[in-house]
Length: 375
Image (cartoon, rainbow, N blue to C red):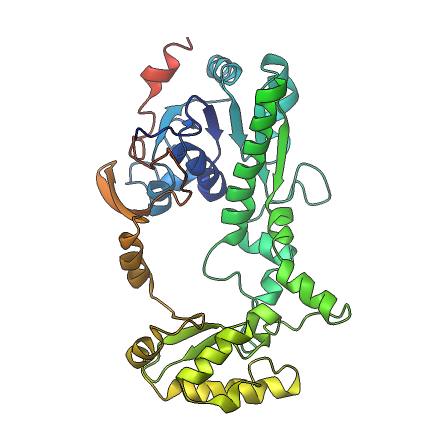
């Protein structure tokens, strides 16, 4: 059956740089939207790296299925070209600090007067208003301000943003895509667009529900870092080290799963210990840790492979890529003078098959194709 990309016919102008905006528009592009990256001449957007060098890995893995044009927005003639393109587009995404687009004459109020159905999305660290609005920041700052980093503590270590920039990816990328899609759906019904204000700190804070629920559960007290229910507070939910230094992830929250594990290792005495908290928690964790240390990673994988206990090996990146290829989630993409390993579009639906129509674009590759009709 032919694929019908659900966003076919939707034009998106992408004025963003670096990771959050690129992830947002990657989702839109993979689902069929015509995403046009608007980049500064000569240098391109920051993710490309220094001028004259091959684009960085982040650029390659987040900019397939997009076209690239170059415009100097401070140049009156090129600014006018941007306005003409915006007037013909469905969505516009920008990630400048508040006030920059207004100084360029490309703010929402001005653009909405040209194109009332325009969905205009602004991605910033701290939002369009408020005491932090003009502050610079990166993912670690947004997680810190949202109370997320303080909870990312293991065994008394320092607060950490974790291994992935979640404020950028989920706070900026996915939240922006959701906001855009919601406003776009409404615009198709009413003909009226909206300004979508995405503050990455707000969005990642809204995802910090595990810590908030722990605070409520324990009478409103401050959750101890690394001891929330889902971050190490329960013996049955956490990671343990094997005899050869690898790790297992235990997610046996429900009794039936913990029971299955205890049966598999012939330790029925541990059945009541999986949910020990407070002073008893440490003793239970050490007992389980000693049990896991008695076998190698391969031995545990063989023993628990057929046990429905929500216990899995902690895979390395290379191991996860091998596993992802089996489901078609890991692909190789050629373009821009390089072949890169990338993740496929994870959203699957009927009558739509993800495909790569365009490799990551060369800077300004589509200037003639797009800007000539715009004058």
